[in-house]
Length: 87
Image 1 (cartoon, one colour):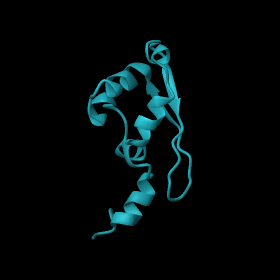
Image 2 (spheres, rainbow, N blue to C red):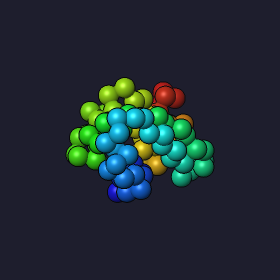
Image 3 (cartoon, rainbow, N blue to C red):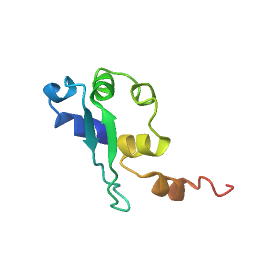
Image 4 (spheres, one colour):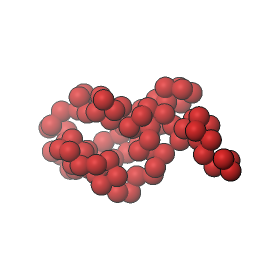
């Protein structure tokens, strides 16, 4: 289960049907940094209904998608897997 799936358990269908934006505040499990991500309720609905995260949130950065799927922020992901340092 992804971090976003856990968050969605606490968001009612009524909120998803509003058409408003929803503020998500996932915390990186490694560095404990909280990230604020603002998404459209309709995008959350699409994800909840089975859309792939990159299709449900087409304008979301890869780092934001990462923390929502794995619970790890982009910086910690890059450190752990050696991304961006020529490896």
